[in-house]
Amino acid sequence: MVFLLDASGSVGRKNFQRVTRFVAEVVEVLELDRSPGSSVVSRVGLVTFGDIVTINFYLDTFGSSDDVLQAVNVRYMGGATCTQDAIRYDVTFIE
Image 1 (cartoon, rainbow, N blue to C red):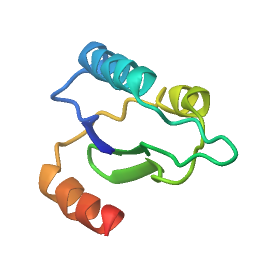
Image 2: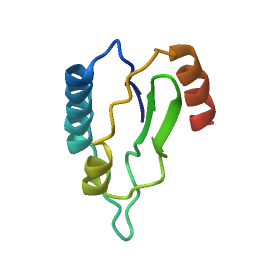
Image 3: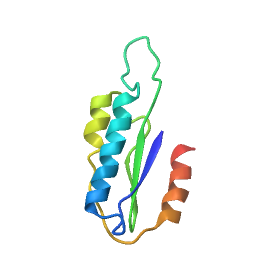
Image 4: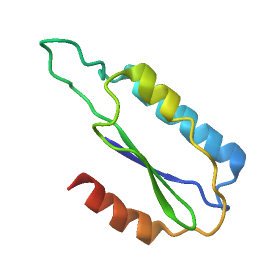
C-alpha cells in the first residue's frame, strides 16, 4: 500500500497532521512485522507532494509496524498543489 499525501498549502498544517494520524491508524491494524519463517502480509510506502514530490519511504524500507509509525511523522511542505506530478511519480514508484 502506497500512501500519497497532499502536503501543499491548500491542505494546511492542521489537516495534514490529521491525515498523517489517519495513516498511522491504518498502519496499526496492518500486519507488517517480519518474523523468521513468516511472510509479510502488508508493505507500506509513503509519498508526499506539494511543489515537489518526495518519496519518504519505499514499500520495502521497513519491516516492522513501529518503524513505519515513526517514519509516518513527515514534514508538512506547503506550496503549490502538483497532484498530476505526484500521481505520475507514484505510478513509477510501484512498478
